[in-house]
Image (tube, rainbow, N blue to C red; front, side, top):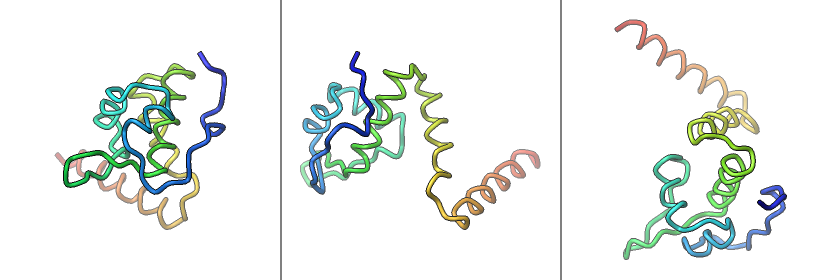
Length: 114
């Protein structure tokens, strides 16, 4: 197992990456990346007219973060999903945080009213 921080990996300065490029950068097979797409909705590559996946740099960074959580920190997929969900409040404006809390309260109210 490599001992590095996902933020230390150099990602080329490009707009889009093909799945093979992402696979090389992350050091995981393409099939793993496709599986993670089903488990982590924030990984949502654009598709070309021929169906080829194009990942944005932010998605490549997220894939590296997921790899670190799963492989290095030994999180389960559900645990990584929850952890990444809790990170959504970092670097967000107060209005974004209040909006997220408001939506969560609405969801709780709906559950309780059933």
